[in-house]
Length: 162
Image 1 (tube, rainbow, N blue to C red):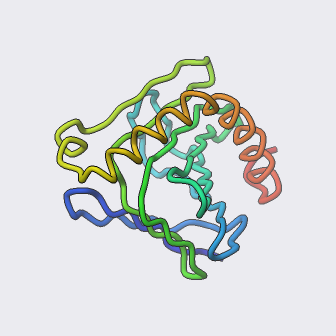
Image 2: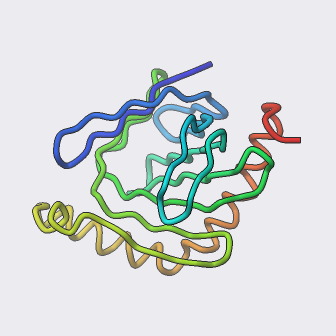
């Protein structure tokens, strides 16, 4: 089964990705995955044909993507801070707050974001970013380790990894 993941940027852009479903439990959580069709250059290169496994929870102000190379080697975890996440039977929709937390397999940690966009946010959104950043600074690495295990299991269950 496939559903849509829709990201709304702070600039009003809409990005839609069709994803396969591992778990879809509206309105609480979803785990979606898809194969990357072209090289992605983020803090680490993500080769073509790697897998993206997205973990979405209604009760957190972030969701996570775990990237796995097609040979099963993990690349890293990317936490996206969002607002207004909606999980429905048709898919997931979220508003990007333009601040990302990266956890590499080598333990490399990095925050990145569009400072101009972040500075233009309302006070409630800036407060949400600050609280979420503190939360991920404390537990992001542990959560990323758990997601690494889960992503591999999901991809193996669906026949995409040996």
